[in-house]
Image (cartoon, one colour):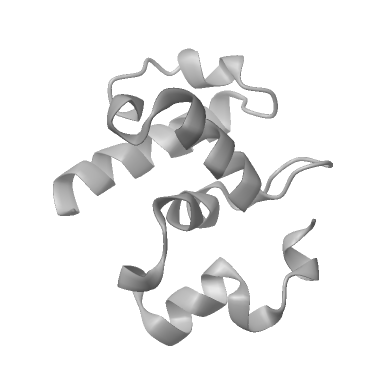
Length: 92
């Protein structure tokens, strides 16, 4: 399912805008940072898959190359994941 197929009020960005950061899951927050998924997977599903595979606590310790082992994750998204983890660790 594409993000555009999700009712507008249930999309991560709109929920953030309406309700603030506290109502979003880690997957939704990561999806906002990733911005896009792949042709077959939206950013929220991709974020869920990444967090499920590595575990939220272990994402921070990954090298930039390790997330690239996940289908759909290239260098840019690996950097976005790293930034998400650093910010989450500092502010949460």
